[in-house]
Length: 247
Length: 298
Image (cartoon, each protein chain N blue to C red):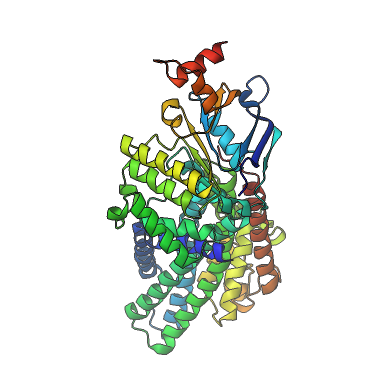
């Protein structure tokens, strides 16, 4: 895969809810491009527009205006074979066993059964879920559910991985495991990663670029190296960003 | 097709594995047997007794086994089929898979449809056998009861198609399951209970206005005819008063005319009835598809 090839392009993307006097702009004229093989962090407080932007990328909501283009060399719905998605809400089918769940998701992705079985087994092992293989997902802790959710996104070895606040339900060890995994995927397989969080400090360790959202707008887009150049001792990256925003 | 089958299989096995399946089946079987004991009174004539059993089994089957409780039960599963996934958020992962939305809808539809059909097959098979045992019927007599069961089962395929397609449309359009259930209940009341109430006030209503009750009632009685079952007069009277499939005409010496001349109110052909039901189900499904294709997941 060639580096620096744009695979997702957003142009003046807007998403509004409501009508008349009670219109709420969740995403307001956002433009950006995502290059292949890089890790992008979407950062902002709650309600900044990160999740809505991700849902626009994933096609779950339609833009009010503007456009979003996916350069994945596939038409709908086949381009979803190249994208793995982890939603913000931890959502599983409660009555299924973890392997059953992964096999079902693999079948919906069109993965051949034997390959799916092998992949699912490896992922359950990687995320330490093997011991819970006989239990229904409704008995899982939120951290285990989150891990299974991440596993289902990796089943089909996507070119693009989109994760919406995936570390919320994870303990510190789980968070580190996930971030290390994402870094490894980007480096070894050239996977493009888009990860959103309201914690800059966890993202700054792995991302190549950050997109900072505030009240529905993309207020800052920068590569992490440029931001870190300006980082003074004792100040966190988020404090630097906040200062820039105030200016 | 494979994805439709996978989704349908998951839906079917999930529903079959639930305790409510057994609770529903057993309650319908036992309540129906109680109804049979009450309505199929003893008669000294074997033929009269058999006619009463057939007629009572059909009436209970039509109004109860594949009637209001079934419509409500399968209807509730259908009305929550899509809305539950939307509310739970699981639909997000389905819609971000290489899966066309019509495949998702078709899989859901097929899963619930097959569940309803299998449920009816089980309940009718058990009921038929219990009737045979309870009334000590020999093979020939039992066979005539099984004919009624087969007719009811054949009719249930059409009824299930209708109720599942209507329920799924409600599920696609309405987010709250309780509103979908209320709409479904209103439909059942209008379809089943409004016609007899209206025809009491306006006697010519059912002879001039085909309604949902007549449509499904006629389909059910036509099934009986195809399996060689003739209903006894009291059963026809119930159907004439409630769904208008027979007309009550006076005859000689107070004997109702339909005993001698059991014609439906309108000479609707069997296949045209099936066609109309399939058309309605198809239109409802198409409306569901339009709704789900434009659905945004927040």
